[in-house]
Length: 189
Image 1 (cartoon, helix red, strand yellow):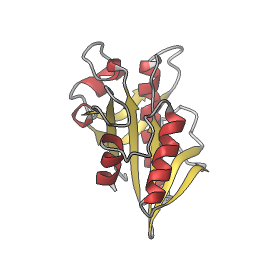
Image 2 (image 1 turned 135 degrees about the vertical axis):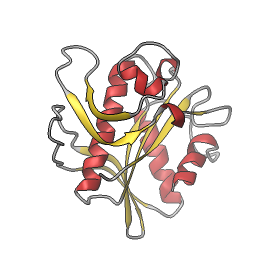
Image 3 (image 1 turned 60 degrees about the horizontal axis):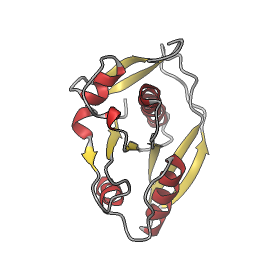
Protein backbone atom coordinates (compact mmCIF):
# COMPACT_ATOMS: atom_id res chain seq x y z
CA UNK A 1 0.00 0.00 0.00
CA UNK A 2 2.90 2.41 0.70
CA UNK A 3 3.94 2.63 -2.99
CA UNK A 4 0.31 3.31 -3.95
CA UNK A 5 0.04 6.09 -1.35
CA UNK A 6 3.29 7.65 -2.59
CA UNK A 7 1.98 7.50 -6.16
CA UNK A 8 -1.23 9.24 -5.06
CA UNK A 9 0.75 12.07 -3.43
CA UNK A 10 3.56 12.49 -5.94
CA UNK A 11 1.95 11.62 -9.29
CA UNK A 12 -1.83 11.68 -8.88
CA UNK A 13 -4.18 10.60 -11.61
CA UNK A 14 -5.78 13.35 -13.69
CA UNK A 15 -9.09 13.08 -11.84
CA UNK A 16 -7.49 13.98 -8.48
CA UNK A 17 -7.68 17.64 -7.48
CA UNK A 18 -4.88 19.53 -5.76
CA UNK A 19 -5.24 19.31 -1.97
CA UNK A 20 -6.57 22.48 -0.34
CA UNK A 21 -7.39 21.19 3.16
CA UNK A 22 -7.55 18.01 5.26
CA UNK A 23 -11.06 17.12 4.09
CA UNK A 24 -10.01 17.23 0.43
CA UNK A 25 -7.00 15.02 1.25
CA UNK A 26 -9.23 12.52 3.06
CA UNK A 27 -11.83 12.33 0.30
CA UNK A 28 -9.46 12.30 -2.65
CA UNK A 29 -7.34 9.57 -1.02
CA UNK A 30 -10.37 7.51 0.01
CA UNK A 31 -11.87 7.59 -3.48
CA UNK A 32 -8.46 6.86 -5.04
CA UNK A 33 -8.05 3.78 -2.84
CA UNK A 34 -11.57 2.59 -3.69
CA UNK A 35 -10.77 2.97 -7.38
CA UNK A 36 -7.79 0.65 -6.80
CA UNK A 37 -9.89 -2.10 -5.25
CA UNK A 38 -9.74 -1.29 -1.53
CA UNK A 39 -12.76 -1.03 0.72
CA UNK A 40 -12.61 2.31 2.57
CA UNK A 41 -14.52 3.53 5.62
CA UNK A 42 -14.44 7.22 6.54
CA UNK A 43 -14.45 8.73 10.06
CA UNK A 44 -14.80 5.47 11.97
CA UNK A 45 -15.58 5.99 15.69
CA UNK A 46 -13.33 4.21 18.21
CA UNK A 47 -12.73 4.36 21.92
CA UNK A 48 -9.12 3.54 22.73
CA UNK A 49 -7.22 3.30 25.98
CA UNK A 50 -4.45 5.85 26.37
CA UNK A 51 -0.96 4.81 27.38
CA UNK A 52 -0.21 5.45 31.03
CA UNK A 53 1.10 8.99 31.34
CA UNK A 54 -0.71 10.39 28.30
CA UNK A 55 -2.88 13.31 29.35
CA UNK A 56 -4.22 14.50 25.99
CA UNK A 57 -7.92 13.94 25.44
CA UNK A 58 -8.11 10.73 23.35
CA UNK A 59 -9.08 10.99 19.70
CA UNK A 60 -12.36 9.31 18.86
CA UNK A 61 -12.54 9.06 15.06
CA UNK A 62 -10.19 7.49 12.54
CA UNK A 63 -9.87 9.34 9.22
CA UNK A 64 -9.71 6.19 7.04
CA UNK A 65 -9.96 2.48 7.70
CA UNK A 66 -8.79 0.66 4.58
CA UNK A 67 -9.43 -3.03 3.88
CA UNK A 68 -7.19 -5.07 1.58
CA UNK A 69 -8.89 -8.45 1.88
CA UNK A 70 -8.53 -9.39 5.55
CA UNK A 71 -5.78 -6.80 6.24
CA UNK A 72 -7.03 -3.56 7.84
CA UNK A 73 -4.96 -0.36 7.73
CA UNK A 74 -5.70 2.62 9.98
CA UNK A 75 -4.79 5.94 8.32
CA UNK A 76 -4.70 9.35 9.99
CA UNK A 77 -4.21 12.49 7.89
CA UNK A 78 -3.07 16.07 8.46
CA UNK A 79 -2.97 18.90 5.91
CA UNK A 80 -1.98 22.05 7.83
CA UNK A 81 -1.71 24.93 5.38
CA UNK A 82 -1.89 28.12 7.45
CA UNK A 83 -0.36 28.85 10.84
CA UNK A 84 -0.62 26.70 13.97
CA UNK A 85 2.71 25.03 13.16
CA UNK A 86 3.69 23.74 16.62
CA UNK A 87 0.08 22.84 17.43
CA UNK A 88 -0.27 20.91 14.16
CA UNK A 89 3.00 19.10 14.92
CA UNK A 90 1.57 18.12 18.30
CA UNK A 91 -1.69 17.03 16.66
CA UNK A 92 0.32 14.82 14.29
CA UNK A 93 2.01 13.22 17.31
CA UNK A 94 -1.47 12.64 18.79
CA UNK A 95 -2.48 10.95 15.52
CA UNK A 96 0.49 8.60 15.89
CA UNK A 97 -0.49 7.84 19.50
CA UNK A 98 -4.07 7.11 18.36
CA UNK A 99 -3.00 4.75 15.57
CA UNK A 100 -0.56 2.96 17.90
CA UNK A 101 -3.49 2.39 20.29
CA UNK A 102 -5.69 1.05 17.47
CA UNK A 103 -2.95 -1.42 16.54
CA UNK A 104 -2.52 -2.55 20.18
CA UNK A 105 -6.27 -3.13 20.46
CA UNK A 106 -6.35 -5.15 17.24
CA UNK A 107 -8.66 -2.71 15.42
CA UNK A 108 -6.16 -2.62 12.53
CA UNK A 109 -3.22 -4.72 11.36
CA UNK A 110 -1.21 -1.79 9.98
CA UNK A 111 -1.07 1.92 10.63
CA UNK A 112 -0.04 4.97 8.62
CA UNK A 113 0.04 8.68 9.41
CA UNK A 114 0.39 11.23 6.61
CA UNK A 115 1.06 14.96 6.89
CA UNK A 116 0.90 17.08 3.71
CA UNK A 117 1.76 20.78 3.83
CA UNK A 118 3.15 23.64 1.80
CA UNK A 119 4.17 25.53 4.96
CA UNK A 120 8.00 25.52 5.00
CA UNK A 121 8.04 26.08 8.78
CA UNK A 122 7.36 22.36 9.21
CA UNK A 123 10.69 21.27 7.72
CA UNK A 124 13.11 24.22 7.81
CA UNK A 125 15.67 24.40 10.60
CA UNK A 126 14.97 26.60 13.57
CA UNK A 127 13.68 26.40 17.10
CA UNK A 128 14.04 23.57 19.58
CA UNK A 129 11.30 21.62 21.34
CA UNK A 130 8.70 19.87 19.20
CA UNK A 131 10.30 21.40 16.08
CA UNK A 132 13.38 19.20 16.59
CA UNK A 133 11.39 16.04 15.83
CA UNK A 134 10.32 17.40 12.44
CA UNK A 135 13.50 19.29 11.48
CA UNK A 136 16.45 17.33 12.87
CA UNK A 137 17.51 13.76 13.52
CA UNK A 138 15.89 13.71 16.98
CA UNK A 139 13.84 10.51 17.34
CA UNK A 140 10.14 10.96 18.08
CA UNK A 141 9.43 8.66 21.03
CA UNK A 142 8.17 8.70 24.60
CA UNK A 143 6.49 11.73 26.16
CA UNK A 144 5.75 14.65 23.82
CA UNK A 145 4.45 17.76 25.58
CA UNK A 146 1.95 20.25 24.22
CA UNK A 147 4.18 23.04 22.85
CA UNK A 148 1.97 26.11 23.31
CA UNK A 149 -0.72 27.63 25.50
CA UNK A 150 -1.10 26.10 28.95
CA UNK A 151 1.16 23.19 27.95
CA UNK A 152 -1.12 21.03 30.06
CA UNK A 153 -1.08 17.78 28.11
CA UNK A 154 1.24 15.25 26.60
CA UNK A 155 1.07 12.20 24.35
CA UNK A 156 3.09 9.04 24.88
CA UNK A 157 4.52 7.25 21.85
CA UNK A 158 5.76 3.68 22.16
CA UNK A 159 7.27 3.47 18.68
CA UNK A 160 10.38 5.32 17.49
CA UNK A 161 10.06 7.57 14.44
CA UNK A 162 12.64 9.64 12.57
CA UNK A 163 10.41 12.22 10.89
CA UNK A 164 13.20 14.38 9.46
CA UNK A 165 14.35 11.54 7.18
CA UNK A 166 10.80 11.01 5.87
CA UNK A 167 10.07 14.39 4.25
CA UNK A 168 9.42 14.04 0.50
CA UNK A 169 9.22 17.05 -1.85
CA UNK A 170 6.06 17.51 -3.89
CA UNK A 171 6.73 19.07 -7.27
CA UNK A 172 4.68 20.10 -10.28
CA UNK A 173 1.81 17.75 -10.95
CA UNK A 174 1.61 16.49 -7.36
CA UNK A 175 -1.31 16.87 -4.96
CA UNK A 176 0.32 20.05 -3.59
CA UNK A 177 2.83 21.89 -5.75
CA UNK A 178 5.68 23.29 -3.64
CA UNK A 179 4.75 21.26 -0.60
CA UNK A 180 6.18 18.26 1.20
CA UNK A 181 4.75 15.23 2.91
CA UNK A 182 5.56 12.82 5.70
CA UNK A 183 4.34 9.26 5.40
CA UNK A 184 5.01 7.29 8.58
CA UNK A 185 4.35 3.60 9.07
CA UNK A 186 3.15 3.15 12.63
CA UNK A 187 4.75 0.46 14.71
CA UNK A 188 2.66 -1.98 16.71
CA UNK A 189 3.99 -1.83 20.26
